[in-house]
Length: 482
Image (cartoon, rainbow, N blue to C red):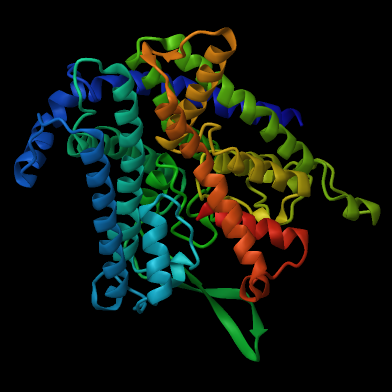
């Protein structure tokens, strides 16, 4: 358990240390402050506006901003669907995969454009290199940028008094992608490559087996090893709290997550932007103590739950202990405990913590089999999700959801002491509370109703391979991730 404590606090500490300057940098990017990045990339930004015909000085009201945001993502979803539909006619397909099919195409397009990144396919057996790069990786950037700009616009609304608008959607999207996501992704991808992640366009490798075996009456003498541009997609998968893996095994695959060090920095990458947005909020509203306080609440919710999850899996499976199986901490067991569905190079503590980090941030990534977690560890993951994923939540959505909770808390506190509720100098009235309540309640209502419908229909029940309570948990997890 000492290793679990060290790993947990190291992950959190590194995330905070890196997020602090990133939050200051983001304040400069989204304002009129000068910085080195704007001097270097300013010509590229202006060229994008010129080519796209964007008036960078135009200010938008919230209705125009929201409508264009929705249309932008709808167009992105349609593009991804068409790309997958035409996959077998397009280049960069060394294995000559056909179109995945209408259902998978639609599921994938809807999933990636909404930052859900739910996958019902194996990437290395279904998607071409072009689909992975131009489809999944591009949407990983755009869906993450879409979440961030909503938080930026919301925070801007709290701070503006003299302007009716909340900014320019196109400017916010360009700056988020150009100044934040792309530079961070390049640095992280290069680190992954240095550690052993692959990045190539080579054909799949056929390796001779040292020990051939018979499968379904056929002698298997070779193993097919998938190749591809993995590191570049892995970086934005994590930084954008996306989660769609290049391989079916996701971050459990050694080509995506080759070492214990990459496992650590993958978790840091997931936390980085959600933490930075909290610091950005504190700097932007000129109340850093408020930002730090919100971050403290996020961590007070996350940390004990993450440690509980690790403790449960490190303790091992009691049914195996009862029959004399040794699950103690040994070098051969990479920390011991419940090793089912766990990569030995990562270990039980690293897997349980990764699961808590991913579910606490709405990230679909995984480095182990969630189906193999101990009951209370699985409960922790579900609880982190059902809290509304505010611990610290996804990029943009985490701070936005937490601010909705803050508004309700301030409103109730104001009523209790008989004062007009105010937050950052703005009155909180019935309309604001209705909108904040709707933002908080819409997710659990949709999840619970969707789960109830699924378990009420014969087709939904028949699709579950694990009967009983565990199968119900799988349905609940699926509905929450969709």
